[in-house]
Image (cartoon, protein in one colour):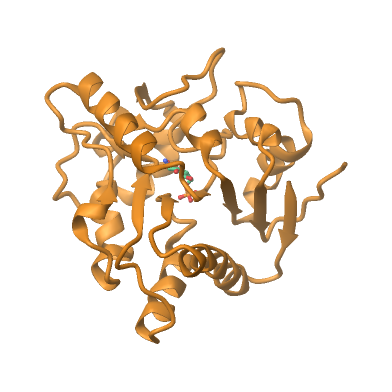
Amino acid sequence: MILHKFKNQSELDRVAADLMLSVVRAKPNAVLGMATGGTPVGLYEEIVKSYQQGLVSFKEARTFNLDEYVGLPVSHAESYRSFMQRNLFDHIDIEPENTHVPNGNAPDIEAECRRYDEMMYQLGPIDMQLLGIGHNGHIGFNEPDTSLSRFTHKVTLKEDTREANKRFFNSLDEVPTHAVTMGMGSILHAKAILLVVKGQEKAEILDRTLNGAITTEIPASLLQTHPRVIVLTDCDVNYKL
Ligand code: GLP
């Protein structure tokens, strides 16, 4: 792993965006793994700026999102499809059919998970997977557990995750209880991983991710096993080799 620390978030966003853009510039039909949440909003803004300045094109790029809520209408402002349209896809020249987000409203969720994996493995591997991290160490919606799943699957969200995401909804009751997420195997299959961690309140979980035991109780700690992980953060942490 490589750890880069930043004093301010706008500098971090710029570097994170540049890393993703460098992948698309080197390989116009790159497959990018996308993340949602508060963390990537600023870096998506930077990507849009670069596109508007004519510095990059996404005409041939493909994207796969990490996850989606189950049962939330796609049209809901907080569905991850809506999030991606609003923050990125609507502002760049990516072809709509090249953007993939799991369908959390599929009548057969198991079949949807298989479909998503098949498409991802057919078009992949993902060239660069962007990740945020939950306060409990989840990545995508792979929640801490005694075992983790390799492939895309349906998960029951932990109460602390629902609490953390409540800020995007009117009340806790509105936060979905389930989601579909890429599995750990698919995430670790990416050629490179860009983990972005913002806010000192995540310093402890980041420290455990980087320096603690590799354990399914902290899904992000499995990133220690990946050969190409770049971590960008404004947290006060160190990577102890
Ligand atoms: C969400 C998403 C994750 C995200 C994490 C942290 O629930 N499923 O992909 O990384 O939680 O979100 P935030 O960046 O808002 O802290």
